[in-house]
Length: 604
Image 1 (tube, rainbow, N blue to C red):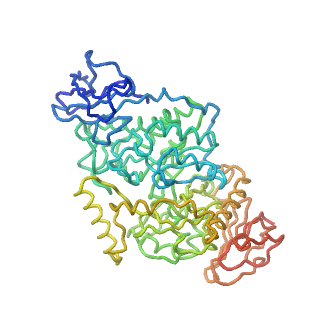
Image 2 (tube, rainbow, N blue to C red):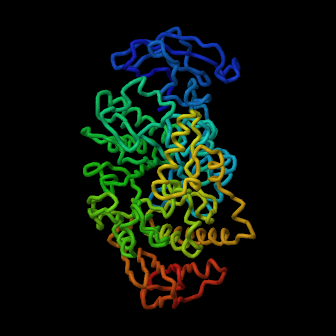
């Protein structure tokens, strides 16, 4: 999907001119975009694509450019690969082929053996850059990570943002280091044996710097979703919009050597066409995988609880997997006791047991939060549980809380170990959120940096008012526009070795021990949901999970339990959180399960 021309799709324009600015490749300008500009008429084709005339210079890397549409502008290229002056400035040509890759021996990493680590580049390190993130790859390997999942890195207006307000989908945010830094990051990950998953957003565009509607019908004004006007997937002009999205996906997977994509909130994609965009995307990615010999993965974030996402294309969309938020909700409620909002239906050990054996809690059942029936039942005999990606913490479930507090703010290390064991050793594909492995005390809050005063003020006031309606004191809800909110959200890596707080190191060692056990498991493709069994007691608050070849015994209560009674198939212990957190040796046999603890064994 390498772009080596100035062609642009602008079916709504009567006249398009290519504007050329600085040529940074020849040292003719300082790269600020302040140099002289020239305009060159373009020629329209029958398909709405415009092409540069013979008077335009030959395409080469490092050239700043944009477009005048009927005399207005210049506007950046919708398919721009670089926006060095921000999303409102001129685009800059970038040649992916100029980078010398060192991952020729990389053959990918199977998703059915994955341990995913979700991180935000801007808050993962003090520097907040892709290059700085590469210095922490050894740490990720030490906790068993196989796939690094980056929150969106595409261009947005401002200096820092979660990434979901992107408007320049083909770019890498310059504050993170731009395209070359991204290539270096992927290269370094592959050298370390780590796959890369990129989070991409195709359901909406951010509020500032979205020039796409000036070029063509990228949005469908007759269709709405959570964020406003829907992306046009099924109305007039939609074939080119769909091509735009698929080309973007293939760019990450092809030009940038990325191993997979996490598709944001696919339930917000409004597509009533004969072939759903996701099925079309999956087919295109399958072709790329076949051509390169490296399997690329597509993972949907979907709250539909519908296996249509990963069923083969004769029955579904043919993606590789999807998130199951029901796992998070069930674990969260059983450990924290929170039951407000969408947590209400998960207020039982039985809810957790159902999720562990059936993948979804809402699988055609009544959802009190939605006020309707929700979800579709999975075929337990056919469904490989690795197709469901689960987490006890993630960016949404932390960042969308009023103060962005992690489980660390609520739970003891004992309960954190239970969450870790269920996530890492349960039947599903686990995903960790950066810092959870050492019980990071730093919050991860909602932060923005909109330069426009009115937009910034509206964002801040809307966020504070939203939580005030829920009973929160306005003074404790962080202002997303305050730079301190962003700074507070950065990980404090020094916590790991802080002698005043040994619990951080203790929790980290729990994650390492669990990851070592996970590494011994057979490929997930061999397991089916029907192979998973759970026994539990609602009153005594215990749960025993048998997911071949492991048995997990969980005590959620304040009293010790007779392990031989509740888990007769519990064999020689492989792990016990109670002893591990206290630096005690693992006994050769366990007869009792300590309060708020988890123990793991092979079947007796």
